[in-house]
Structure formats: C-alpha cells, structure tokens
Image (cartoon, rainbow, N blue to C red; front, side, top):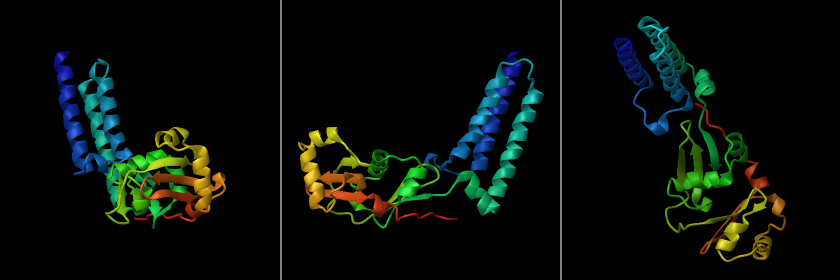
Length: 222
C-alpha cells in the first residue's frame, strides 16, 4: 500500500517535471490559461489515483504517458500552425491604440474600466491620459507604452461607462453638479456619451466618449 502510494508520487513528480520542460522556459506571467490546464489535469490524475487501490501503478503510468504524448503532439502542432495557435492559446488584445480606447477588445475580454486602470497602475501608469498603447498579453499581463515619462500624476475615475462614481467625487471634495458643469465646459453635455472620465488636480478632466472608442477595432495577428 505505502509502496504503491510512493511510486505514484514519484511518477507524478516526474510527469510534472516533464510537462514543465514541454512548456519551455516561461515566467508565470507568460503562461497561458491553456498551459495551466496541462498541469491541473495532471494534478487531477495524480490526486484521483493516489489513494484509489483499484488504480495500480501501471494504470497511472499509462495515464501520465498518454497525457504527456497528447501535450507534446498538441504543442508541436501549435508551434507549426499559427491559426491553430491563435485558436487554442489566443492572441494579444490591443486595449488602447494611439491614445484611444479600443472598446470592442475591452468588452470582448470582459474588462471593466477600474480593472483596466488597475492593470495600468501595475505598469506604473496612473492616468489613462499618459497611455499611447496598451496590449493585453495572452498570459493576462498588460504591456504599456506611455505618451511621455513626465507630468504624470495620480488620477481619479469619475465616470465609468455613463455611471458617475459618487464615492470618488466625494473623496476629492466635488459633487455631481460640478462634474456635469465641467463636462459641459469640455464639450460633453450628455453623460450617456461618455465611456470614461478621469480627473487629476493638475491636469483636470480627461474624457473618452463611446464615439471615439468604438472607432478602434485593432487586433494583433501572429
């Protein structure tokens, strides 16, 4: 009994090491959701078989070997066929192109405006005003090219897809009347047209409309 459990653990460890080698030298940020499935399924195989006496070491070896062969064949096909690679692992998504929101890609990736801001902050970019390009990589990380390195300061999200962020307004000592009047001064009298609006003490309001954002439908192809 104990010898069988130990044997399965050893085989499982070897299988995980082989899968790691098959995936190549990737950092965690470069691992795709599909890569993660490889290891999760192998872990599931090990978990189910570890304490099940009906599954002997030969059955387990067969399952691990078959899974490894399937991964190898699939990775080989993916490397040689760009269309298969794009279908299985996906392609990077351009979220911001030449300073404009690519709303179609943002929506297709189910990203909310505050989530987008969080992604940008992870790249030391605290205002959408400063972003020239932003690309969501297939591993989930975001790559950012800034308009410039200077004059950057923290910004506050005031309008998130037509909705006024009242708590944020109150936190900066402003009210709805001030926001509406400020938007009108910027040439945006209709709140329904605004997909994004941020404010910073030095730079003031920065607004993006649906009309601006829906023009951008940029995709990256391998």
